[in-house]
Structures are given as structure tokens and as C-alpha cells.
Length: 317
Image 1 (cartoon, rainbow, N blue to C red):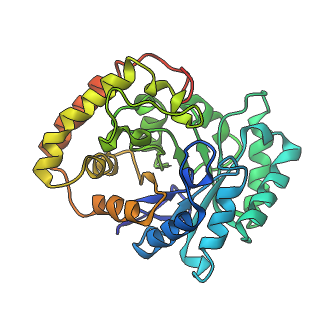
Image 2 (image 1 turned 60 degrees about the vertical axis):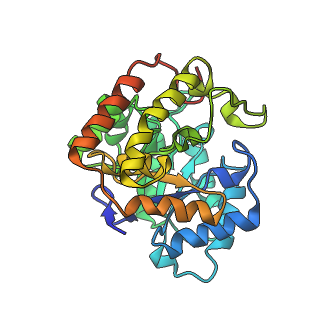
């Protein structure tokens, strides 16, 4: 398992990060706490020692599961990232939110503290960053990250403190930030930990054009899961099958490997609700896609993703 340092910080992450969104139980369905904890432990035991969570993932439930899963592990060998909710970016709310996450996680410090989304209430980023820098100086957080921020928003935030890592939504079928925040990150040496690298299951190949999600499942209203785009994405995945067969891997492993080999990506955040899913995902670390095949798949991906409408984001058409 390769390891990388984020930006100018001393925070390390492996080439995959374990995503704790699905185990929170509010956007995705079907998570079971016992299996979720076992999945976190399986990830750590396979060298995936970085865990990404947020208060929004089950209203603190995901953070609580991380606390339980880490019992018995050496904290200094684990990298934890969590997030400052978008409705708590005002100066008086930043510290209490961080301290609540510390309690829920059962930790004294957070390695990476992301702003989850840019403010929707016009909270001054100067105030938010000032409070985050104070928390950093006190050792309560080790580095600051931005999730779902545009290039312009990153540049504005950087006026008030060091940004070491970004967390955009990115996959072979969703790459709106390629020529915006991701190009900037590569230019400036900022780490990139993308979420939903499997497009919330689309790139696993397990869906058909006729797949229907329950109203309780967040994917039922996500932009790319609406027709005709969902059907087009399923067709795109079918075009990946010969490449997966060539390398003797699953579609998910191929898609994760493509993400891991992108020059501007440090390590994808990969979720799992069961240990066997961790076993499958980690195999993406065991092979490399040739330069020729990478270029072909990358161009196919761009042709598809760049032709999508300008949705507000992954979750809102």
C-alpha cells in the first residue's frame, strides 16, 4: 500500500481512504452496525488506515461507529477526517461543531477537518478560516480541507489559511471539476481525496437501465440517476467491460484503478458496508493499467462526463 502526504502538512494517507458515508444510514440503505465496524477494521488491517466521515452521515452515527471500530488500535497510526457542516460555518459555530465531532469520535484531535460545503448563508469564509486556524494552532485539527469547493472559492479561502486537501465528487462518469478545482490542486500541490469514485454503484456494473431506487435511497433523486443520463451511464459502463476482462478484474476495481492513476488525484474515498467489499476494493491496488489503455478509457470518460448538462451538483439536477 503506497502512502502520500497531503499538501504541505505532515498528514499521511494510503492510496485508498475508507469512506464512512454509507454506514451512517441516512443516504444509502442497508447498513448494519456490526458489519460496518467490521468493515472499518478490515480496511485498517489491509493498510487503509485513513477514515473519512462527517456529522451529516447519520447525524453523528458514522462518527460514533468510527469511535467503536478504533478501540484497540494505535491512534497515532490512524488518519481521521471529518467535516464542518455547511450550516455551521459562522464564527460562533465552528469551535462547538469541531468539539462535538471530537466527542463523537472519542478523540483528542482530528487529522483533516473539511468544510463540507461552501456556505449557503453567505457566512464570511474569512471568519470560518480564522476559527479553523485557531483550532489548528491548538492541535485540535492537523490540517484543513475543502469539500465541494470551486477554484474561485478555494483561492478565496487560501487568503486566510493553508488548504492542504480537497474533497470533490469525481468518477469516470462525473468529472465537473477537472478543469477547475482539480487543475488548480495539481498546479499548487494540494492533495485530492475524491468521494463517490464508483458513482454510488454505477461503475460496479450491478445496475441495469431499468434499476429503480426506493424513495428512502438518496440515489433516487441524485442527478445522474435520472433518465436519460442514468441509462447512458449504464451504457458507458458496458463499454468498460472488455478492459476489465483484459486485466482480470471487476468493473469496480478497474474504475478505482483509473481514479488512482489520475495525476491530480491523491487517493479516492471508497465506502463499504461489509468486509468482503473491502476485500474487493483493495485489489485495485494490485495492478496497473497500461498508458495506452488508460488514455483510451480516460478519453471515453471525458466524452461522456463532459457532455452531461451543467447540474448544480451530484445531488441536484
